[in-house]
Each structure stands twice: as structure tokens, then as C-alpha cells.
Image 1 (cartoon, helix red, strand yellow):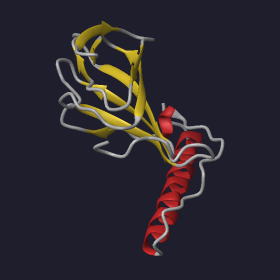
Image 2 (cartoon, rainbow, N blue to C red; image 1 turned 60 degrees about the horizontal axis):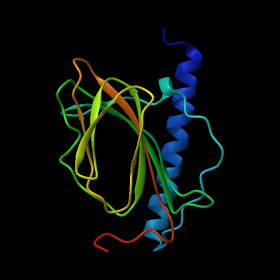
Image 3 (tube, rainbow, N blue to C red; image 1 turned 30 degrees about the vertical axis):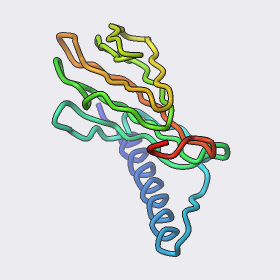
Length: 156
């Protein structure tokens, strides 16, 4: 049951995120790329809306700089049974995938490996990887990725 407190937390979180987006937009308009560093925060699962996708849904928790990272991005994907988030791909940033529920196969170093709840997948910089739901029900997993000053740029 959603309480008034849940609605208040959702509203405050939404306003904070919109404020951060506004700061980013103003900085971009001024020719600056600098956003304030993310401060310590709590992101309540119930306050982050699930946005439907063609293959399930996604909850975007945070995307922005920290004191030590150029960008920290955290989202949670839920894939419907038999779905794939996207074709295998690579990117310069590293990322962790933490399985919350369901059974998935992760493409790691050219091999599909089956894992379940509590499992962690590390995707290294510029290595081909992918993930697909091979279970009978939904699969939900956290994605945490980051870039630093030494992260290779795309195509390097």
C-alpha cells in the first residue's frame, strides 16, 4: 500500500532529480559540462517509477558525476521471460550487473553463463557482453556503471 510518506518521498526525489537535470541543462547552455557531484543519498525503491519498455521495464536511480567519477549511473532493469535487453555490445566504461530475481544468461568472454539471484557479472571495458532472461518469469537486475578520467573514449 502506498502511503502519504511514500508519495512525499517520491515527490521530493522527483524534484531533486529535476533540479539536477535543470542544473545540467543550464550548464550545457552556458557551454559548461560541470554538474554538481552526487552527495550521499538514499534512493527508495518505491519512489523510483518503473518505466515500461518493449522488453519489460527500467528504473533509473542516478546518472551524474561524483567526487571521484566523471559519471555514475545506476538503473534496474526487469526483463520479461525470454527477452534480451539488447544485442551483445561493448562500451568503454566498466559495469556491474547484480541479479535480484530470475534466471539470466550473461555473455562473458564469448560464453553464455547461467546465473540467478545474488549473482554478480562484471563487464570489462570494451569487451563484448550481453544478458538475456532464460527463466519462466521476470528477471530483475541492477546495473551500476561508471566512467573516470582514464576511461577510454568510445572507439579507443
